[in-house]
Image 1 (cartoon, rainbow, N blue to C red):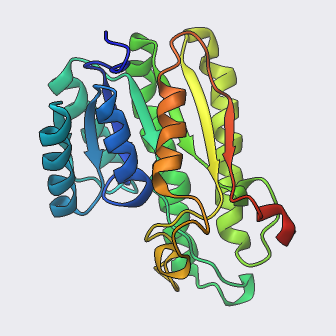
Image 2 (cartoon, rainbow, N blue to C red; image 1 turned 135 degrees about the vertical axis):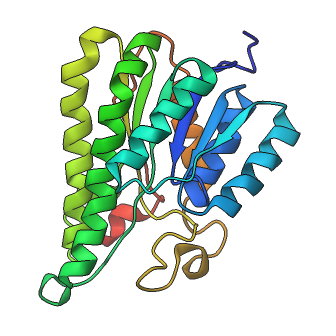
Amino acid sequence: MGATERLDGRAVIVTGASSGIGEATVHALAAEGASVVLAARREEQLERIADDVEAEYGIETLVVPTDVTDDEAVDHLIETTVDTFGGLYGLVNNAGLARGDEVESLSTEAFETMQSVNVDGVFYATRAAIPHVRESGGHLLFVGSFAGQYPRPANPAYAASKWWVRGFAHSVAGQVGDDGIGVTVVNPSEVRSEFGGDDGEAFEDRFDAGEVTEPEEIADAITFALTREHSSVSELDLFRRDKFSEL
């Protein structure tokens, strides 16, 4: 395994791979030689990204259109990955969405949609991946959030879903650490991507370059965690430099 290809041939699944942090992570993992599995609902976007990284890095990819809120679809994602590559080294639980609103005006539908992606989808993917990641001695990675560590008056329900992700991840680490599985939580604050655009202005439109974190910075942190051979990076926070001034 070359020094510049620390994940040479290892299969890693990235959920929410069709844009933003997910897309950047696909590129970062491909640069390390990983066989990257792209999962999201937008198949055309996934195919475009897969073609790009195969051409640029000469690695194998697999596109599996997946709705993470469907447990059978998630099981299919894991099974197809293992059948194709002979195993699974890493899972990046990146799929997520925000429904920012005051609690009294947040609709049941919006709340349940967010919970199904941010909570149920993370559980389904982690549950299905654990036996295979145990066998490979690999990693489970969870994309958390600043909102999962500090109270967020603007979007309490979203914040709660990310507190759940963080608590779930660290508790899973306690359960599977003896099995040699690495577990990491990466917490961004605002990232300049299309995230946040479902209910309002997307971060890529709200912020200019240099104002907040870029997706590639989060992808680098994810890749750093997944390339630890004998350690587990417990948690990494990547916040814009003036983030604490708003608290």
